[in-house]
Image (cartoon, rainbow, N blue to C red; front, side, top):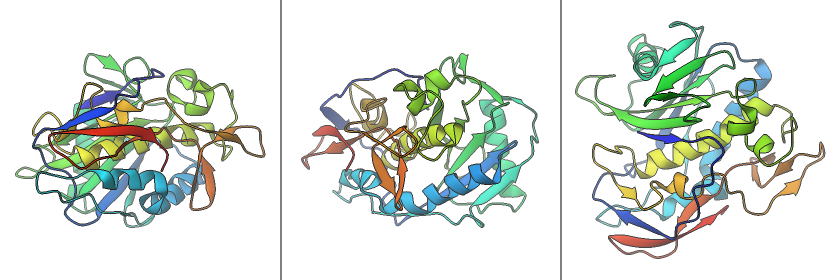
Length: 280
């Protein structure tokens, strides 16, 4: 598991090394959301729209530059159905969570028949503004904005990929919400500061999971800056202002978003490859 730390530019390291672990290149990866706690219809609409369109966006296609030891690349596209791939959990384990709780939330969604059991999927537990989470000797906002990891206990005999991402709008907007970090205050491209902010973290964790799904168990791509998302954390490239005065740097399905850059491989060699932080 690799925590995505609040508001700290990890730098633009130019090399990353293949360590022999698997990547998610066996067909299209599915993405699942578990909305944990109170989210508005607008919140869900923005996040679901993003999920439906991110897989073919130029910024996501950066992940297709990654390959395994047989030079098989990650395919373009993400499978996301805003009905079948979404579950709403009404604070089933309370408002103070641990990583074990996060894994239990995923387990209950699967074993309860609310989401499919999918080893080629990534399960995002997205928590509401009033939910706190502790893990790795720290907590949401103080140590991390989100993280991903593999679990061999959610479904025995399987390696389930999961991620925690919190809505930081009330707890730490200046640490974990990208528009606030760059000085936009409470403005964001889709007029939803919390969800606009958490989607950049979701992109970070999504990209790291498809390129390194079994991190620390069988690590795939990592370098001096850690995983590909960490290499370009809190860097945004060229931005522009949208109508409400906030900044954006990409369009996903025709809608503006501000997402961190991602490390794009510029060669095709093993074990160490060259990369550059990019938006497409």
